[in-house]
Length: 177
Length: 158
Image 1 (spheres, rainbow over the protein chains, first blue to last red):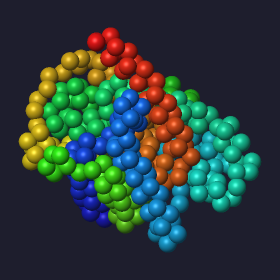
Image 2 (tube, rainbow over the protein chains, first blue to last red; image 1 turned 120 degrees about the vertical axis):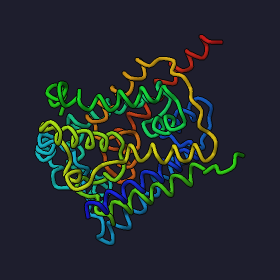
Image 3 (cartoon, chains in turn yellow, purple; image 1 turned 135 degrees about the vertical axis):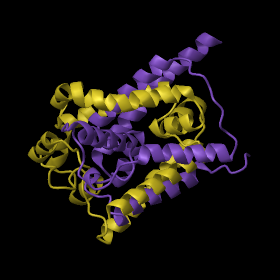
Image 4 (tube, rainbow over the protein chains, first blue to last red; image 1 turned 90 degrees about the vertical axis):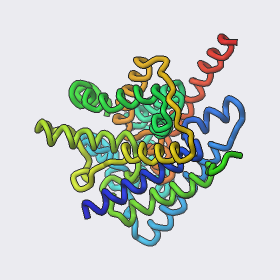
């Protein structure tokens, strides 16, 4: 199981990298190009990505193959925060359950959670910095594979930041949850 | 039209289908929507190595105890194969190494904080996760802000 799953993951990632190089796909550049020069081709790629995932997950949830759940929000403290505000029962943070059960009091609990605002602000920083760097993280991998040295330094910073984050910044950032 | 060009909408359909099917049938499960993410998988890879080598206790997800998260090197290999096969590999010197180093470090730190690189933010949106939709909204706002900076850079250079 272990080796098999790793092999599947590697094959899928290689295929995604191959196709991303062939299509110049970038999730940040889709929105950027549309705003700057009204070129919607990459944005269409992003929408077809979202639509395919939405359709397939709906199908597999319906067939009980894929279990419905929120992503990890991995830290125990985050999980406890989410439990406290009523989203610990997996699925409350999902659009499907919100639509099917109606946006009753749960929506206000969601709007009152700190993590929502951290997510909004963090997403804004990711979008801003990615645009200035010239592409999302997937695009930076592809650019390095095409020989861009800018992306090499980007990815060196990317790998080193993991150790820096968990060595030094973790104790400050944990308060944001 | 270049030879061997894949339309972005086709990329969206193929990659989206693979991401969901791999999670459903290859058992890449415990965190949902986790079958492809470059920051989270890189985090798991580095932390697994650091934990193994130095005995630290850095955070990893449940699935990375069973599966080695090699997606970032694998994307590099796949894209490199595509670039070489189509003769698109050419070295370009870096203009601002330190700046790009800081960009990468900042994206990794914020990415760990909000659980996703732009790719996984989009995947989570497709799953219907409300925090994913919030992150995508924020990301669009950030890109909108950055276009002002880009426009100013253009007008200054002209």
